[in-house]
Amino acid sequence: MTQLIVFSVTYTALCFHVATSAISRVTFLQILDTSKLVKEKTKKIIQWKQLETSINNVLPLKNSRITTYRILTTDELERLDSIITENL
Image (cartoon, rainbow, N blue to C red; front, side, top):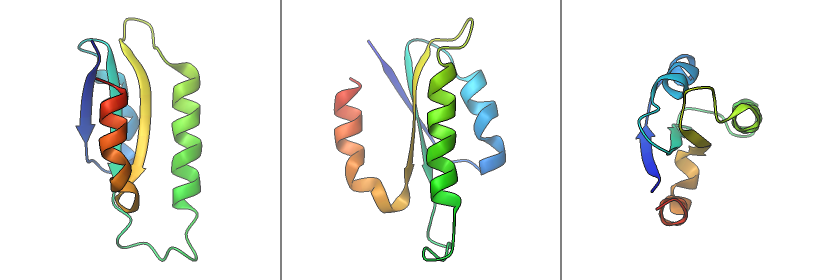
């Protein structure tokens, strides 16, 4: 069984939570707030997706049961149901 952990934390705390939240087989879901971004000018969303790919490339970490890492922005919350269903 997969445990789904959902956190909303600052970008700087992101990697810390991924490294420390291994309780069982875990899908780590990070929801990042985009409400204050100027979407036409920001590169943050692209950077976050690249970070997601990079983290998934090294998972699972030694002595960790986190198997999948996902980033969603607040603009993508309609996908949350399908992601939770996929990981149950």
